[in-house]
Image (cartoon, rainbow, N blue to C red):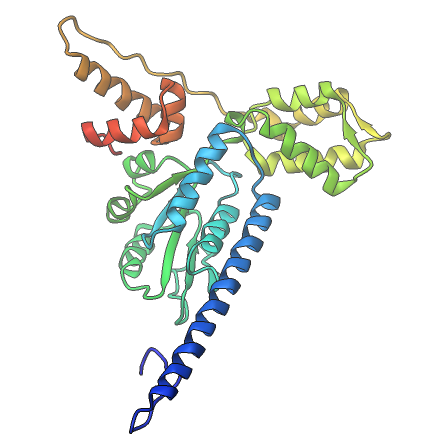
Length: 324
């Protein structure tokens, strides 16, 4: 009774009445199924509009989002600033069985996270690395008693590095380390830069188009601010363009501005030294481990760097016990 009742029976029980109630129940379930199917279709259409991307790194990341949506585990979204963590969290929420429920966001990093109201839904906690240890410990306790809600947390740096730097609670790390979704930076997404730039420009002014050399300039940029920075550059290009074509001169001037000059240096891949006599298994284990560390725990990126399938990487990580 506490879970709710669809109908009731009275004594003496009539078989005809039972048949009617079962028929009604089947109809309700069919309607609920069709409603949920339509809801998920709408969610996917919204995702196509807000999280566009065809590159291999992005497709791998989205596959991780879909896998995470099917589970009830708390999830950690790890990615640089500007990698659309909130949009990814909303997509994860919408694709999950909780998608018809509330999406509650804890935005103020100076205040403890307040438990959401009763019901089913998703609690999104961004900027985890900016929250105090006391807040993170309270959040660690909260994750276990969210009832119908599932926690989706986000961090703007490598979880392993944040843990080492004292920015991430060990308790939270241990809970989340097997449920991390890595969002790739824009500089690793290749032609997605073109796709996104064109989409942002069309949203600003459908009459404008990019010169091919302007797109080359956008693709060559490091994008330290990721998609957020790209959106801002396109916005300014649309405002400053004096024709129907956005040329390379305008784009390069925008990319050379004060914000664009603050670029992050690309980390050089580590060197793996192998001693004569080492077994092939040991060599493989060390190579995968170092590559995984260089890729900040991203299994899709590790697979890409080693030219292996994602399934092979998952199997090797499990075989050698290399989870970060």
